[in-house]
Amino acid sequence: MKFKLIILAFAFVFMACEKDNDDNISAVTTVNFKFTHKWEETEVSNSDFNTINFTNAFGNELSIERLRYLISKIKLTKNTGEVITIDEYNLVDLEDANSLNFSTNQTVAVGSYSDISFVFGFTNEDNTDVTYADLNSATWNVPVMLGGGYHYMQMDGKYINSSNVESGYNYHVIRAVDNPGPNPTFPQDTFFEVSLGEITLTGTTEITIAMNIAQWFKQPNTWNLNEYNQMLMPNSTAQILMYQNGQNVFNLVSIE
Image (tube, rainbow, N blue to C red):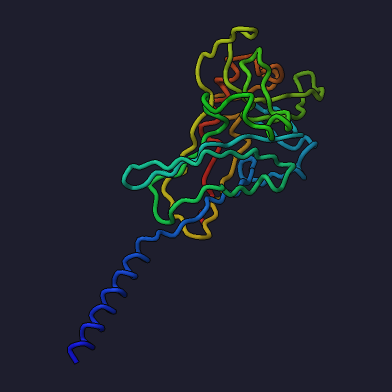
């Protein structure tokens, strides 16, 4: 009987240790994003392109013919303050349905986080010409005379100008640059971090984010396409205005 009690005791300890080991194995998941687009409250897709059916805050009537932008450096902040950085990026292109859904390759622990964020564009450290073959093939590069690196966003279309004639615009967002040429200078950073707030990740979490395209033309700077329409990349004033308007472009729609 004593021998049986010893065997039972060992079995109990073994089972308890096994349970402890299982408890220490944290479940992990990828971070899954879905990107949607609106003009104020109206859904926008590439089926709405090439038709003048939008009006900005200034009153310019316009169309969208292309819209693509870069998000990078996703950060998850734990309740302890520890920050987990996912050093990946996604080129969102409304004409490429696959790019509207993005799952990271890096896994993170499921659970609650005090904040999740991403960078619009690239940070200066990441914004180099040599690393990203897929962006190079997408003609996403910025000319060396403007500092090199990559675009943050390209939005192109037509608008009705002050002479009531259809004219083109190229709302291209890059790192603000002065003195284009062999020695460009940079007056201020124009990438920005988008904070989405608290989140709880499970094994199947999908984070839906909406871009309000109208906001690029709206606040705090009411955008007159008759004044700023083309050749905006070498115009640091225009780039800083874009940076300011971009602060409230993205909104968290849902976490499911």
